[in-house]
Structure formats: structure tokens, C-alpha cells
Image 1: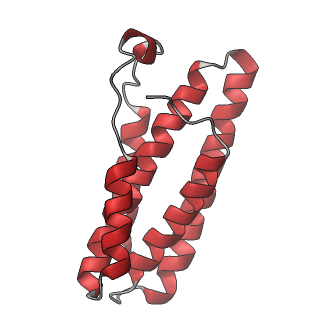
Image 2 (image 1 turned 90 degrees about the vertical axis):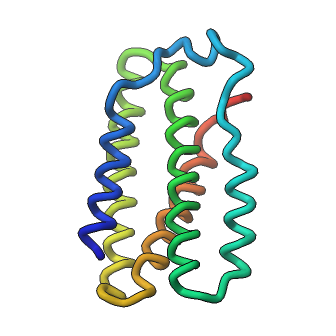
Length: 142
């Protein structure tokens, strides 16, 4: 299960690195952007009410994916306004943060490895860290 979570995380990270959107996408299509807050709130509500471990795992991993997408959008928008060394510094800072998040995920997952609570524990620490990181970045405007 740990390997599956690791592969999923690597897949998300590699997707973030492949073929980035043109920097002017927000300006070229100003009235088009994904609405992530509504599905995030819905999944949070369902997760809070859920009692079955399998359902909680499913909801938490999907919620974590939405938060990660929201972070990717915010970071992409943040990068559009940066140039040169400032941009390089922001990219390196994000790389380091991603490594720290993965380490925290591994540490949360490890005590439960092989158990049904491992996925939920890993997803929760990932969401917590991602939400804190989101709070440090300017949010994209719809």
C-alpha cells in the first residue's frame, strides 16, 4: 500500500512537471478556471460523516488530490509573476517543500503500514500541509 501511495504521489508530481500551461493562459481565457472549492467542501462534509474505513480512505485520497490541484494552480499563478532568480528561488523552495511533505506522509503512513488506517493517516497529513502551504501563496482569481 505504501508503494501505491508513493507511486500515486510521484505520478502527481510528474504530471505537475510535464507540459506546463502557457504563462498567459489566465489572461487569454480570464473567465475560465476550475472551481475546486465546492467539491472540496462536499468531500470534507462526506468525510466528516463517514464511518466506514474504506469510504474514509477513498474520500480522503480524493480530497487530497483536489487540494494538491488547488496548490498546483496557485503555485503556477504565483510563478507567472516571477522572473529570474526570484522564480528560481520559488521553484527550489517548492521542490524542498514537496520533499518535506513526502517525508511527513511516509512518517504518518509507516506506523499503520499494512493496516486500513495507513491511507487515511497519510492523506490527512498531506492535506494539512498542503492547506498550510496554500495559505502562503496568492490565490488565483477566477
